[in-house]
Length: 179
Image: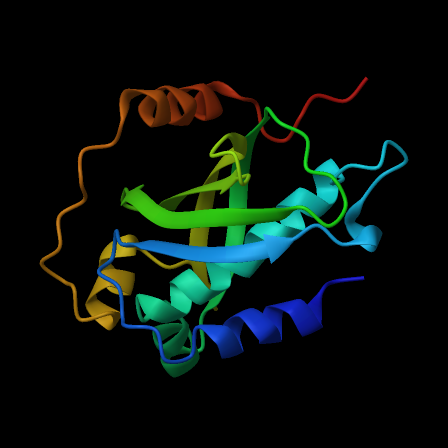
């Protein structure tokens, strides 16, 4: 089940947080709870993706995106993700999550998130490709930026590893081949 109570808690905790610039970093703290673990007593890989929502949605709120989505009656969809898992997170461990918009192109927003344990080690890192959606499909990023009052914003240079991932995704067949 989706952790609605935890999401509302995060939104409540950060309700008075200062607005962030578009590429600002939202920092939040989370615990790995017993229902987040798998049979190896560590944070389940699927649940990790769900927990990343707990950082991404407050980030969207702090940069003004949630307000723009409501005003324009838009939605937000994930169009792809690439994740690395490097350290185990055990039950009741606390992690610090860092979430930020790393850049954008004409159609997509690219978000980077990471979880860090108390020893300062990165436990996982994810790159998301997100899209704002409307009745006609994907809303062009220029239109989204205008709704945020950032029409003149220029995207920061995309790191090489992000560009390589985008290029690799562009070569991936869609729909996938059937046997």
